[in-house]
Length: 64
Image (cartoon, rainbow, N blue to C red):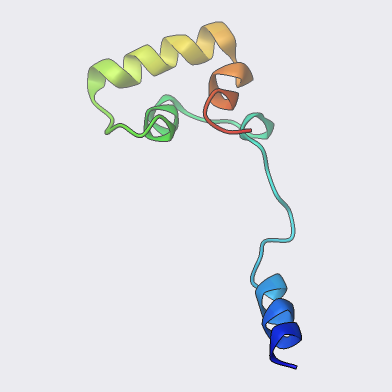
C-alpha cells in the first residue's frame, strides 16, 4: 500500500533524538541567528549579555 510505504520512509529520515533549546550550550552568535537576524558586533554583544543574565531561558525564547 502506497500510504503505508510513504509513512515508513518518512519515519526513517527523522532524527532519533529531538533536542530543545536549553539542553546544550549556545554561543551569542547562535542566539542572534535564532532570532532570525544576521550577527553584527552589536547584536552579538547584546546576545552575550542576555545569555549571561538569563542563561538557558534566553534560548528557550526562540526554541521550545
